[in-house]
Image (tube, rainbow, N blue to C red; front, side, top):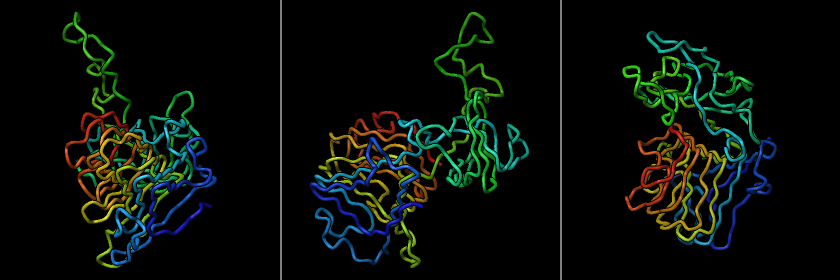
Length: 344
């Protein structure tokens, strides 16, 4: 059973560090010692009562002040530990619809491109995943749980069965050929062109429209308990990181019901940090059912966000650079380094 702890505000001041036992970069949290923090409090609850020096009115979440360190390392779904944060459908799945490009494998079967059983912590029974929409509405992304998962062996990929049936059709295919490879131009045998332009129907004619499948469950889960009061229905939690922080690592962590329906309260918020010389690690996390965006990089430069899964985020912007002065900041939005994340 996971260790579950109710909390309200966590303020990490100068010289302080929040880190779980056996949750280091070399020894991350696994399913054997899973941790769940449940954040409590309504819009009208008392704040941190000046525990947070930079933000005395801070409520419900984690506040990292100058000189403070937040270190969370989970193992599940982390590519640097051999795991898979997200992959794609190798064949269509879900409810078959007239005129669909391919035949569905069924409503409870997924054929995945990657072998999700590998790594220090592979995908397993009971894990929540999200199958992204491949039609014209974002609301057809579906949350389902894994019933069984098996490696595809020599054929590659993996096979997953689901506890809940899919309601919608989700497209899948083989991956398009590489743009760096070449093929002979069918209209001129003396010319070559990028290989994907020669792909057939099995590779969707070189256009990648495969549904992404992302892992929601992680070994560290931060869950906001949303009160039933009418004016607190979108009062989630947040992680606020201030200038001068010492170290931040959020890897292999799930944030659920985070964000608040007010300006400046986002699931993960780097606030006016400037040049993040101690580059933070934001990698292989999942953010689901957010009430306000996902990751906000506010006047903060020189950082990378990678391998994230975002699903049902209540705002158009998933990663937002509010000011326009942010530089060398992933996921490739402004002069950035590439991020391998996706939004469902």
